[in-house]
Length: 78
Image 1 (cartoon, rainbow, N blue to C red):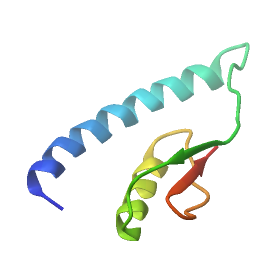
Image 2 (cartoon, one colour; image 1 turned 180 degrees about the horizontal axis):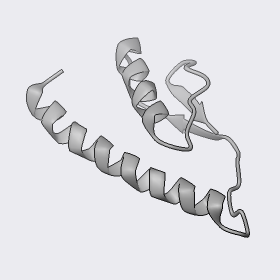
Image 3 (cartoon, helix red, strand yellow; image 1 turned 30 degrees about the vertical axis):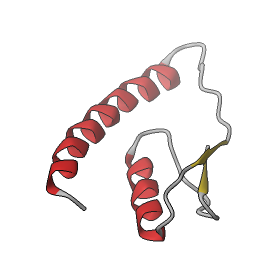
Image 4 (tube, rainbow, N blue to C red; image 1 turned 120 degrees about the vertical axis):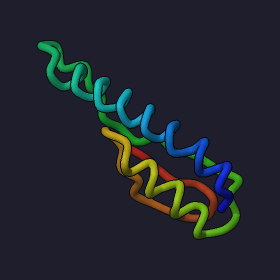
């Protein structure tokens, strides 16, 4: 892990988390309830397991996401 990378990543994660908060709130509080739950499979080129776990833990911090499988080099998010 690099300090420079972390300094770039933290603002990105904060910004995306706030965007996700607003988006999830608007979808769930609207009268038409436009939320469409489902699964999306994401493939990554991360080979190290600790890097994949870090990515999944960050994705779980974002509103409306839940990583449920860490098999191979991909992960699924509802």
